[in-house]
Length: 50
Image (cartoon, rainbow, N blue to C red; front, side):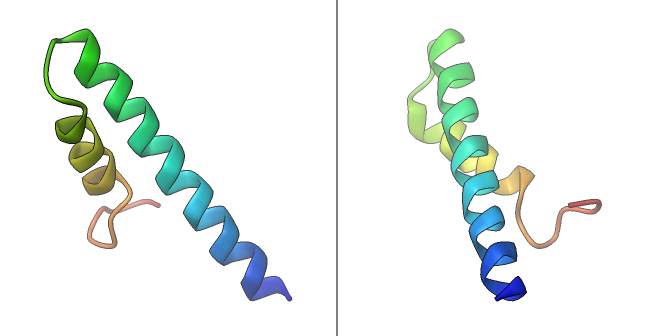
C-alpha cells in the first residue's frame, strides 16, 4: 500500500508541475505545451533532488 501512495504522489507532483508550467508559459505568451515540457523536465528522473 505504501508504494501506491508514492506513485500517486508522483503523479500529483507531475500534474502540478505541468499545470504551473503551462500557466507560466501563457504569461510569457508561449504555447502551454512549452510549459508542460518544462514542467516534465523539472520532475523528470534525471533531475537531481526530487
